[in-house]
Image (cartoon, rainbow, N blue to C red; front, side):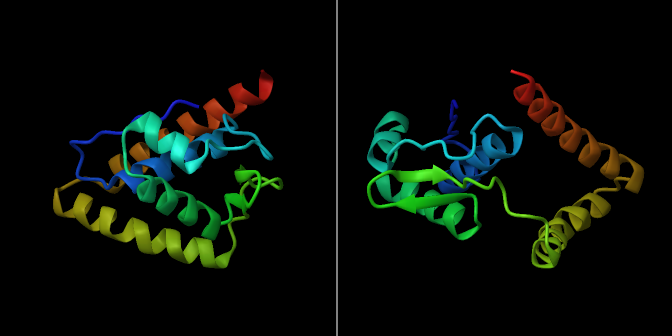
Length: 134
């Protein structure tokens, strides 16, 4: 998996890293049981602080995406991603609300907002289905 960090972005580096690893897991680019690079290795490769990588890995662990082993390091959760339970659905609604508010404030229609959301979801789904074929 290739990680791209935009040092000019307003999005914190640990968030960029967390999101890209989550996307890799969701699309099947990162397989269950696959080891992630060590904190030190990834930090050196990306030219970022190792505490930034450690924070991203901790968020992924707390969210159920990876396991942290003393000897193996960070490993993609063997059961895959955690299910979309009620707690996840509540968190999703909470996170979408500010984006919906901004979109509404900018005059975007519900249809346009849903079309953008649907397109993003479908792109990731197609990527996952493509990786399952290979």
